[in-house]
Length: 200
Image 1 (cartoon, rainbow, N blue to C red):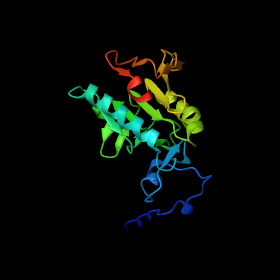
Image 2 (tube, rainbow, N blue to C red; image 1 turned 90 degrees about the vertical axis):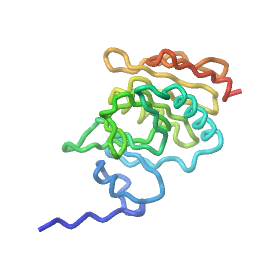
Image 3 (tube, rainbow, N blue to C red; image 1 turned 135 degrees about the vertical axis):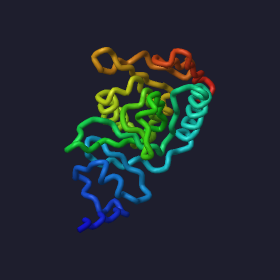
C-alpha cells in the first residue's frame, strides 16, 4: 500500500521556528516568503531588497555574466537553491541557501533543483536586517562547505570584503576593496570589476 503523500506547507505559521528541518521538508514549503535553511534551522530572508541592493545585484550580475560568457563556469542569480554539504542529518541536506550570485564551474553539481555542493564563488549583498546572518552564519557554512571565494558587498559602507580558502580550508580575509578600487577575483585572475562604476 502506498504511503500517503505529505501535505505542502503553505504558511510559515505551520512550522516550528525552533524546529530542525532537512531539504526534504524544504521541498514541501510553498509560501511566498523566501527562507533559507542553515544547519537545519529556519532563517527568514529579508523583505524585498531595497533599491541600493537591487542596483548592486544587477551590476554584479551583468559583470559576471559578461565575463563568464562562453566559459565553462556558469553564473546563477537568486532565487537559486544551493545545497551545501554541512551538518547533514541521516544522509539529508540541512543547509539550503540562496546567494545573491554564485559561480559554479563543475557541471556535475547542477541538477533540476539547483546546485548540490559548494559553488566556486559566492557574492552576497548585505541588506538592512540580514548583516548578522551573512557575516556569521553564512560565512561559517560557506567556509566549511569549501566555497573557494566569498565576497560580502556592503552598500552602506561602499566596500567589498573578500575571503579565500587557504590550503587548510580556512578563510583568509584580503584587504577590503573600497569604491575607489578595482575588485580583482583571487581564483579568476582575469576578472576585474571597477567599483567606481557603481559606488561613485
